[in-house]
Length: 414
Image (cartoon, rainbow, N blue to C red; front, top):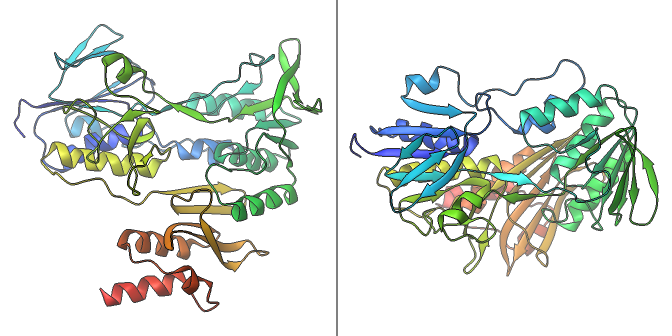
């Protein structure tokens, strides 16, 4: 790439910062600008729903890179400023401070925004969502004075918050409209195990109960009312009902958008000079004819590295195996691959002891592995899925079968 090449990255989260870092690591000599709408130095987001909410002194999220990294690597980091428009024909990005940036390649790493509730009481003090460091600090401050808490939505964030609230000694009610927790992400076997575990740990988990109203007094939340009319006390409420991709900038520019910014197998948008990565990007799935949009740090950073390589001249397709994790009190959940409803499942390990893995098969091929407190299984699962030489359901059902052993055998054979 020539010195006059200019890459602009919109979004200063994990994906955006990784694009810039990988460009410099790959020898990119042109200008690199990263634009982020938060004023803080870019930071790690996973601790916001875990360590940052734990009792004791708050664990400040670590920066993605030290303060001197950006200057040392000639990365123009613009924090506290928002991109308001992209002019595709002119290849420029307009910022809300009046500046205009030209580019030879643009990377959209705009992430996702929390879905909101249009319900009575949603504007009461003590009602929170959780996406940014400012959100986490406000939630932690309320937790320090709370006597009871409620969570709307039993997804990753909701269950992680419930575990953190219990660690403060606060009783927690969790409302989930679906019939099982984390239903969109997990097989029924793992969902049911997590539901039982959270109940045993003290959470009042209410499945099949949606929220109808947030109750309050003097402008502050005091409880929740379900669609069935039941009321539960809560002076702090976390709303975790999912996210939507932040694709407004792309849509306004005229890029193809459908549940995220549509990209091809090389993560290029409908304009060949514009890429998209992370939570905002809808990319081709591993199964023919499918599209996927993933909300995970791993996906954002892997896609960022791939886009940087593409800008530097690589022409490969993006084929990384997705993986996720969640810490919920003593439970460490790790997932490799993507399961779907209807997949055949085989369970390996100790379900009562909550140390087991669920292997999901589609048309006889392993497509995902969920592991609870079995980190060795997770590491092996990622190796097996990446190698695309998978066990059969019959092999996995053998009591002597282990993922680690299978991964070792396939590696030796290769």
